[in-house]
Length: 75
Image 1 (cartoon, rainbow, N blue to C red):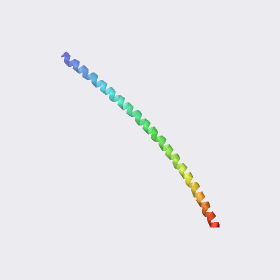
Image 2: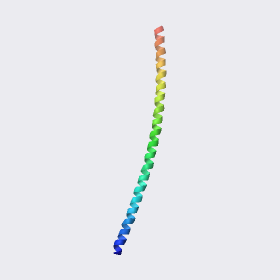
Image 3: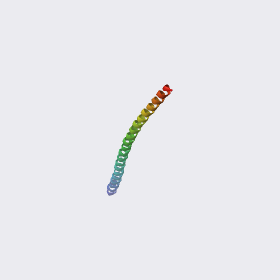
Image 4: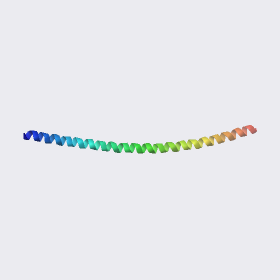
């Protein structure tokens, strides 16, 4: 009977260690996902800023093109 109790105790300890390893892995995954979402937010902000700048460049290009067209019409 003592052997069975000892075996049960060993298995319980092994299971506790495995549960701890699993808990640590879940915690690490949570941190990783948090980092990924933060980077996605930063990337979204960068893309938004790029879109704004492209819009400004487009506006300037249209203005230059319009001036060029007007000048061509006066020649």
